[in-house]
Image 1 (cartoon, rainbow, N blue to C red):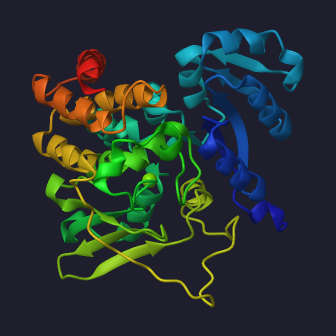
Image 2 (image 1 turned 45 degrees about the vertical axis):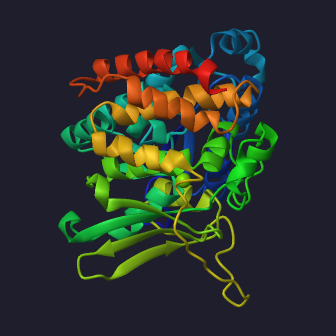
Length: 396
Ligand code: MG
């Protein structure tokens, strides 16, 4: 037998969200490991020109563009894509790529909850699912995890903290875990005094100290809603009780999680703050070839600090815990109200402190329910957005 025939077959990747920051980093990983990974499908919301460049570089013929106008533009420019192009549009296009027979693993990295249907399609088709869009589990964690169990699908978290928890938990039964602590960099306003926060502008919020990410998640980091969403995500992914999920401030973003076991021992996961690490882990699991970027340099002096999160300055974390404790539809309401408020803040029409105010009032006024189906959750998502919109005027 020749040496090459003993190598495992390349893992075939469908990348939904190929033009955002997760997409960029995923492409770096796939480029660096072209002997192990093969890109077979790509999708984007609207940036079809960048998508065409990606498809051409990797010779990908299965392509989807989510937004209608961008899809039309792409259809009129098929010469920019590789020959033999199979171009799809809309949510249906994303779902088709998610169940493409040629793919082994689907990386869902589209913004917000757009990825929910495609993620479920990948699960039903028996693909491995690498999940970067946390909103999917916040909105419908119960249903997604149930489906994954039913179909025996592996969910590999790509969010850095959850990927870290996944690594720390491997080989440890859930009953041995006492709590999971996610680290938070603290975002752009980590060291701002409370009185200054009322003046914070979108430009201020978009200056993240450690991570380069899209605008929605960068604002979520500044309010700590991102950490709130991540606590909810962790609860769903790892079948935890709300009280077992905690957050701690860690300005260096080198330790990504701490997992404490019943005997008091803690495991931590450390690596530089770059998404190529969790993406590579998720795409290549359980293999561990050399990373795309250098590991931590222990010959240089650096320190690791931890401190409690100040929930008075960052009420979005308190509201997230409140939503987790309430359970049922509350996490979906938290997520929807936050999306509405952040969009308004980014448009310059809502103050920074208006974001938690809108979420607090929406949670307080939206009737509590325990949705029994995915359709019911999606209804909660729609209705709570409408309720959040009614609070905008009074929270500006
Ligand atoms: Mg994260």
